[in-house]
Length: 326
Ligand code: FRU
Image (cartoon, rainbow, N blue to C red):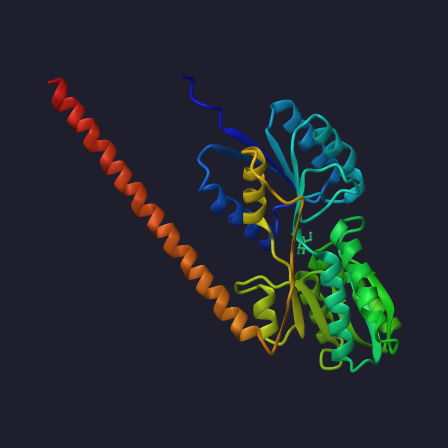
């Protein structure tokens, strides 16, 4: 019988240029190592929606069995993703959504909840009274839209807290460093900044420090990555008052994709929840992530050993075969 064709998974990634996306990819690769019957092909759109559309078109031409996509911006990516779905190719949306219901499954953080939690946390930090500034992620990206919507809802419970200004960011630090000083000068009443990710939150802190406002203004971010430049460290160093954990969903996306491909039951909506990381729990969180990291390294060591054993075994088979033939 002919060997079964491996499953081809195409991954259209909006960008692979930051630590959060790289953690996502590492999670995907780890999970993929359990499925040797799948091949994985990533195209990195470098924050460019037109390029991402082109990439998905290429996937259609090359042939894939399943598409995983993180849409740089929701609207421009929607028609091509609908086309993939309508051709009968399953689509797993990961983290950033399209505007359409035409997809097989969603995997990722709950951005409405992230915004709501940030809003409620901001109100309590300010003792239900104060002026807040929001720094948004890329225009038209679903997490920016949902984090903003949730944030406004979360603030609504405390009428004494007002959202007085916004900065349009692009997920990256330089956009904030450039635009924030003027907005802060125009709004000296601001005592808290909510940035849609930790990179922009770090930029906000740097601007506040430069303007001598870092003791007055508290900064909240999103992502809560481990590692030396990650949000967990920023909270520990008191650069950020808190960060909202935003899990990458890398492992879960591959798991869901494989369930779909093997025609096993799966959930259409897979929402990963958030938590506040602040001074009260940052040490616990850090310990947990370090422990997980250690376990991950152990698994890799074990896999290395298994592979070495398999190689030895294959060699021995060859020797036996040669001996038998002689
Ligand atoms: C990484 C990132 C994260 C953010 C997410 C939203 O590329 O900008 O910082 O939480 O994308 O999709």
